[in-house]
Amino acid sequence: MPKTPDNWPTGALPRMLDTDLAAYYCGLSATTFLARVEAGSYPKAISIGRRQMWDRAALDAAMDKMSNLRRPVSAKHEVNIAAESLAAQRVAERMGSGG
Image 1 (tube, one colour):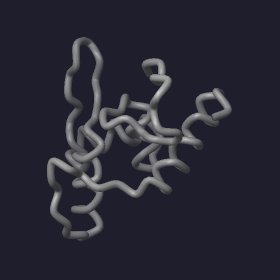
Image 2: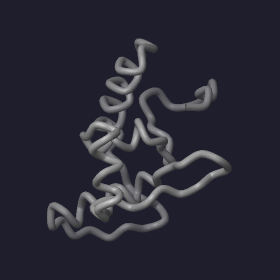
Image 3: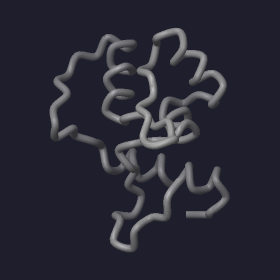
């Protein structure tokens, strides 16, 4: 994952997630996440250079579909900042940065 900019809001997740963060965001191991991508449950990655990245909004839409939740997805995708902050803290702890 790239270095976090100095002015980045505490706890905010980037829009584009690498495999480990996408899997974590979906509550899965990387292996299970990739298997479910191949099965069509989650969207395929977007190639950015040599990196494979997932759009967080596309993952949300896939999870909404799985849970039969119907909500519009717009260019101004709304997020729950408190939940995002907690998820980012957990990712940071898992990655060993301590926050």
